[in-house]
Image (cartoon, rainbow, N blue to C red; front, side, top):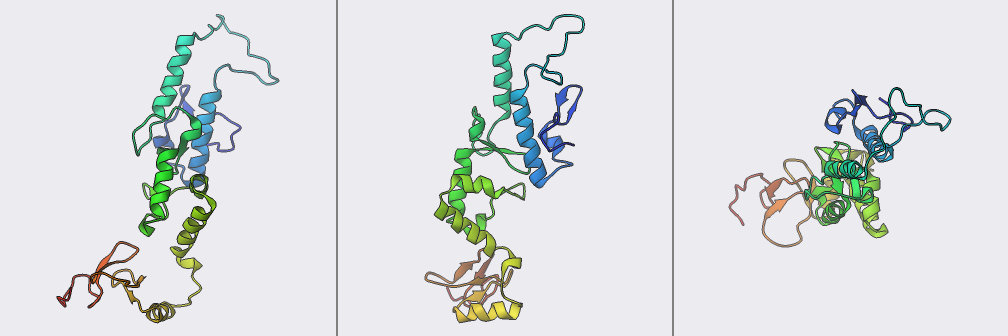
Amino acid sequence: MNTNGDEVPASCCGKLLPLDLVQLVVAGHELTTYAKQKVKYEIARGGTKAKGGKRKAPTEQKAKTPSKKSKEVVDLTEVDERKCISCSSQVASLDKWRVVPCGHGYCVPCLEEMANISLTNWNQIPIRCCSKEFPTEYIEAVLNRTEFDKYSRYLAERDPSSSILQSDRDYAAVVRQNRGKQCPTGGVGVVKISGCNHMRCPLGHDFCWNCQQKRCTCGYH
C-alpha cells in the first residue's frame, strides 16, 4: 500500500477502499497519512491524464462531460463521508476536517473543545479515539502556545520513560517530601489540598486518604 502520495490510494474494481478496511492493516502515522492522501485524491479526481500532461484518447465512445448536476452529487457524497464522530455534523470544508489514526474523523471545533477540556482534566491526556493517540500536530493547531506547552508538559509527565527518578523508592520519597500519599492501585502520588478523604488519582482510581485503601475501612470521612 502506498503512503507516499505518488500513487492512487488502495482500490478494488475502480472504487477506493473504505478506511475501516484499510485500518485493519495500517495504523498510526501511516494511517493518518493515507487518510489525508485519500481525501486529496478524491478532491483532485476529475479528468484522467496520461504521462506528459496529455489526456488519454477515448477508446470507443467520446467520454461525456459531467453535468453540473452530477458534479453536485459527487460533492455531496464526499461531504456525507465527512461526518464528525463527536457531534455528528457534516463537515463541508476540508480545512475543518481531521482524520485520526483509528480512521474516525472529527471537525476542528470538536477537536478544539476536546483539547481545552484535557487541560482541565489530566485523565484526558493524551487525547485518544479507539485507544489510539491523536497526532500532536492536531492539538498544537487548535491551542495557543501557552496552552500547548501545558499539554506537552502533562503528556511528558505521563510518560514513565521521561522521569529522572531511578526507582519506585525514589518516587515514594518525593511523594512523602511533598506531604502526599500514593494511590494503592497505580502508585501515583496524590497531594490533598482540601475536602473529604475520598481521593481520585490522575489515572482515575479511587481510594481513602486516611487508610489508603481502595474501599474505606476506617470509616473516617
